[in-house]
Image (cartoon, rainbow, N blue to C red; front, side, top):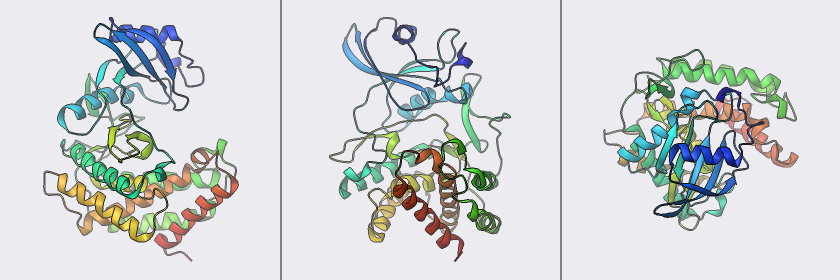
Length: 363
């Protein structure tokens, strides 16, 4: 059954791949299967023959048991809605199945879009290309947020066949986005005395343990002073270089990927996470960093259709959400940097500590 599939034992056979394609597109014939090496789910690029000619497509199947099926089922539906109601570039969806007795599911078939995913390699872009990518990011997130408000803060999934903000034991809904951000931040801080969220792959399980008290104090001091959050909207919380297909010569965004685990949250949190993920490419100087931030924010504000502005209240909340991103990065240090050299890990640790000293006024 589907629930038994994990990444470790998910060596999906070519026959299983062909069966999934037949389920979705009976007239298509799989000619070649190229499996992705990384990721928690099964992803393969396929060459297929059809009655209208050959084409290249992407097959994705949920194989990680820690991903709730009702969450995974949202991705193809979100791709369809975003493709239908916005100008954000996303792959076309050729079909999907929510469940299957013999195959890993949900699974879905997508358009193949050319481009480079530049996780850790964004320094290949020149500055005009970075600015073009940032303008597109602002416009794409504005279009997503303009899809409308949602009934609560939480994880987007599928209930009764439709997109919904879940409210389950594993994915509880929250009414107060700032309180949820506070709880998430404290959970990350609590993990730092034993290797963060992934202690099994960290080389130093107490790397940031000495920072816990000052980090907690900053959270408890800051959250009560923040202006109330805006209403939640769809947010792509993982808008980063690794989830974009980019033309490296021009910086054009050919497609935005990874619409799984979409959140319902206030836009300020999404803007903070995007800036955290995108602005630092190539280790820019302060003037370049500030110019990139203006490019992103100006594009976002201009594209929103409801008069949004970066008020003092929005910027205050964004600063706290950025702090949460930083704490989350420390909690994920072991996983994210397990292949880094000791000197690279030391440099990243030093950067985190410098941020904490500056933000928390800790000597």
